[in-house]
Image 1 (cartoon, rainbow, N blue to C red):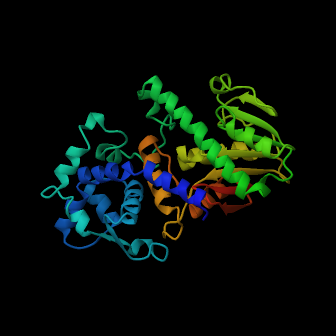
Image 2: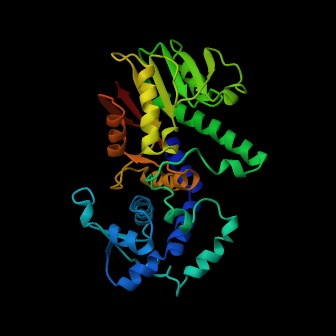
Length: 341
């Protein structure tokens, strides 16, 4: 990995460093260290789920993050036999019990009303489990912040779009060969598709987002701003791109979105380009730490969103009716998934 790519990975790690404290706070509230300590031996995911009253899906994601960071220990090989995997204490997790330093860590996290993200109560209610459909699964924390923070969030989205699109142009230009018209679904102000059209001038770009969003979008050469709802229909094009969209939504909602994207492209020559993180659960990928930290942020910020493994992406695409897909890893946090009808 070159210096610039490595520096970007490091920035992601630093930016999401606060997630470790937030997740540790949740497991102390759940009583996970105490349950393991009192049990006296490793416990399976099912046993822990029953003991602390948290759905297995959410608890698995949290344990995946914390074992990667050395706070708990995973025993067994989940790829060979998931049911045989168990979790054990480490010297660090033993310090997190209620009769040790657990109360101190909770104190540092601040009063419950001032904590961003999720709590043990949220997790027990099913947050992050994807088990129950919600009336609205959009990002939930943005409605509770002031205008200055909302502006900062919009600046972050534009900054991320620039960095991710540059990586795509540098490492995956072949994905855009032969595309005459490209729709960027959820493209906000059109930053990403504008950069792609400039890099690949044979492409006509469509920036597709909610009407109130595109109404504020500035004019961009070669780009048409179109307002609409991705759950109802997507503009017709040779290819549709979804950059950092699907991780905000549950599996069932993602399948609905993907079906609409599939309907928008030609069945013989079209494709859907997905730009998202792809988690390597075995930790062999140099981006795994950043991916798992990002998954914790998505769990905190959304109702049922999540970062996904290659297997999980394949299951989504199969369920949406795609015939095949490829995954291209880049020297970046994101990978490029090309799905064909």
